Image (cartoon, rainbow, N blue to C red):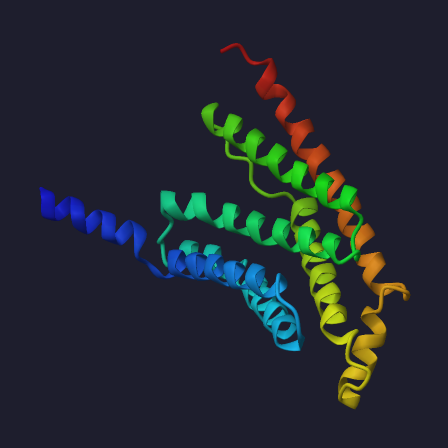
Length: 208
């Protein structure tokens, strides 16, 4: 019985999707440390860590479903790690004056709100899956953050390889791309948060 229980715990915790999720958490920690540093090396490291971490956002969930390795730990870790990564990045960009602090606070509040609503839904036996607004929100948030990190990495370098000149120009906040990505992400954040609240009204009306 003990051996069987141990084998179950090992299978539930140590599998490929959960390993990818934990690796993303590790990359998030490295990203935060690099973002707190100075110099081009720290900037490139922060950009690399965030890009790799964000690119694996869909991979662990896809593999968990594809390989039938969905676990309670994975269901808990995946959204939490995603929120830590995104919120940490927005705080960083606000400190660097690339994102108004009120935008970052609103996005963080939305994440707490949705997490709370999902927990209430679970207690009522309802699963609140991410809607299209939430998925679009995540995409534009990641694009904005990567654009901001590219600019932060390149702004202090008067000379960059010719292949990167256009990229530095595109991500410069004085031009339209980076601010536009932020405002679109903000609108989608508000819409998705409102949509979650709208679908949660029935949960609060039910008698407990």
